[in-house]
Length: 387
Image (cartoon, rainbow, N blue to C red; front, side, top):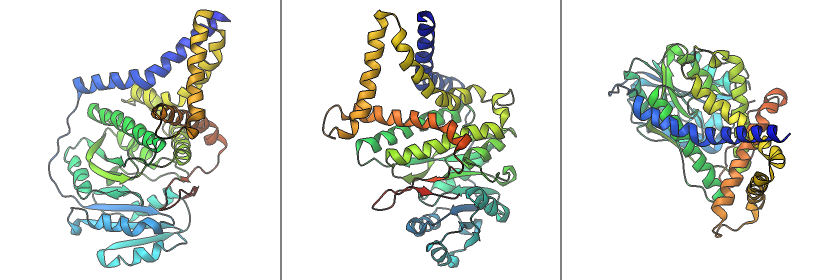
């Protein structure tokens, strides 16, 4: 048992280190040496803005004001708000903006994919701009996205979601995790393409858009991949910004379960992701699949640590015990304690790993996984969204 335990332990440690540190470092080196610049110039194309929403009364007015404040010619814009069976005041508020050309499309509750499909059918613009109800947009956001399409090889341009600083250490670590993800995505964009967009702020050529299957969990991956497999690039324009606030760990856990379950679903819809047609295959395996495998590697490390040779066992077991103790004690450690940044980071990481572990069973047995993680002004409320 001892040789097997050593092998499994070392393989698991190597996998964890590669996915979390090794791959990002290698990616940074490759991006410096093999970057593919995007040819950008100022241009103005016709744009269809597609905003799906269900029961978005707390945010819809601010969102529409944000859209109308975009630095872009209004005569080149059409704005569609697709209300997915909203039962609050969303529809009435949208109707108030008819004077500005905002068009309300009300559909029976069919889910976000159905809402997006309804918008894409009506859209006539050369570019489709997808956004969500909660995040506000920078005034230059759309112009920056459209400029990216001056390069004929670009099919999708994703903006950057900027998370404001969290109000406590756990929210701050969620924000830190998102910055880590953004760093990886930015370097993927530099060498070729990202394997998905930021769902609240991305645009694509209308001729590349395809209908979404009814139960699609990750429209912002499904649609960009359609462009990728037609030979186009999917890039990030960091100057095209949407702004949001980080949520608590409970809400982030639910969101990660959905998004990671969506990776399993995407594999079913695009099996060629694992084949030679995917020019980004090594990155898909290292970034996306690696994240799904990480929690299993951690479990193997925890189990095999007990069967290591005595010289290794104590260090391996004690180190893991300290890590999990930090995670367990974090909710009770005051914010002002010096150890708090370490415990909150450990807890946030463990929550993400637990979400990755739950993603597979959730995909197989979880039914509808559309979870709303939106934070209302005074309380974070979790409920089923766009089911």
